[in-house]
Each structure stands twice: as structure tokens, then as C-alpha cells.
Length: 127
Image (cartoon, rainbow, N blue to C red; front, top):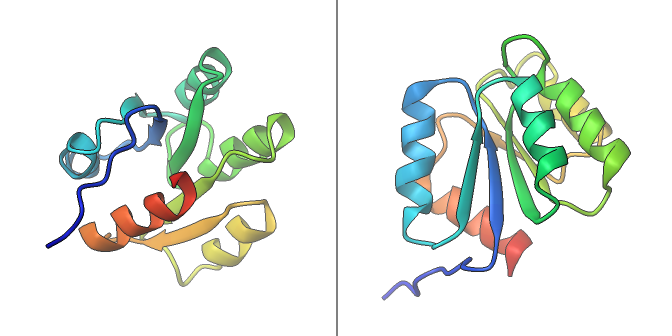
């Protein structure tokens, strides 16, 4: 039997502009009791990041309108080096993984993301 993950005292910022992906993260993380914040643009992500000092982890899509996920990652790293940032993208062939890691991402998830991999990865950083 799988043990139930609880991130009750954690806040996760989910930066994602695709509705189906947002629904996936919502469903995947609902049972963990984490507080979930959503940003659909890079600008929103930066604003939420600044307004919520209690953010424990960031799930960051790279392909965003206005400001790219790379720019958001740079911004987060300028402000805070300790918050785990898990980048997720479908574009792995264009060097996005290497670029993300160079800019300070903690982990890179390839889309489509498997539920067990997502939960295990988040758990590794929040436990």
C-alpha cells in the first residue's frame, strides 16, 4: 500500500499556462493538502513569488506567454537559492533541460508527466 503524502504546511507555486496541465497538477496534488498557487504567465509567477514568502517549491513550465520560464527561473534564483524549482517541459530536444539546470533548476520533468514521478520528485524536495 502506498503511503499518503502530506504537504499540509507547504505552499507550491504552479506556473503553467495549459488548462489540461493545470487540471492534472490540481488533481495530482489535491490529496497532499499543500496550499497551491497558480500562475499562468511569467509575470504572474514573479508577482506571486514576491507576495508569498512561504512558497516551499515551484513547479515551473518553460513555455509561457510574455516572460519565459527561463526568465522566471533567473528571477527566483536571484531572490532565493534555496527554494526547490522543478522545471517541466515537453521540449527536451532543444536543450531546455541543460539550460534549466545551468540556470539553477533542481530537477527537470519531461511532459507528459507521470503521476508517480511527479509525486516522488516533489516528495524528495519537501520531505
